[in-house]
Length: 327
Image (cartoon, rainbow, N blue to C red; front, top):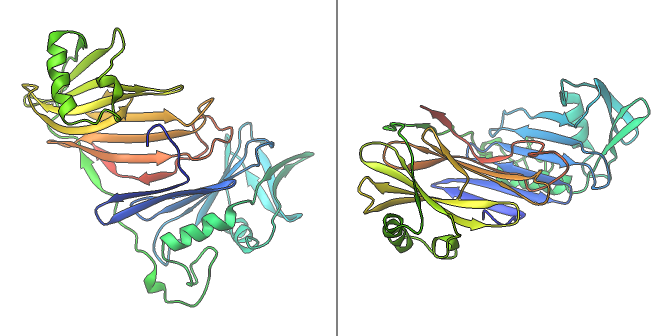
């Protein structure tokens, strides 16, 4: 998962499911609170510009929208099928869409639609290819199909079928006592004993460098408290990314208590982070985060940008797992 990209992703955690999906120039992601975010972009040959629609769960929820583009003008007008739908006021590179503008977009979705931002003689087109598909996928996920609250597939079905909003999970970083990390060369005897234990709980395909490490590679130990240690070892290396294996072990380094990730990029203040470029210049990212909650690490955030469209780091955060983390 850390090294490859897919168009349709289902993430399960207990009874909660999240969804990530793309089609042509649009993508969407629904998180564990059942909130869906839908993003559309320019065609590949046009200047970068993106629309984000955010729709919380629940039959009474209201949809909101934003526009983003690099080097945005102070103002621009939204045009749909050669008709103006009001001015957008940009602050830095973003502007909020009005409800009139959002409803105009949704009303024209089943047609071939020409979406443009205009300012003076400049025109920024936004593709409509794939919009219907992601709207329908959002309706299906939130169980809005056939109801008056649907984005695309409206009808007279009872609103009681719509998914309810779920509370955001809350995690607290517990029993973490910052201490000096220890680094040991992987070819040293101490490191090799630890690596032997890690291999027993790890598949070679998940962490090939555990079996064939590079010259100069190090094993790092982060003390978490008096009982537990986070052990870090290089796992894999690709053209634009590297992955660090992170394992939770007991203080004696004799027992692997949890394999946190094989694709980590850093550890800081009781949290493990993984951030990987999608391709080329790295304007797409996949992000995951975990927090030490006292006995183990819990996943606290996950997001993926499925499309690289000229926005460094991605135009928007499109999470499939969200939570509140306190220390």
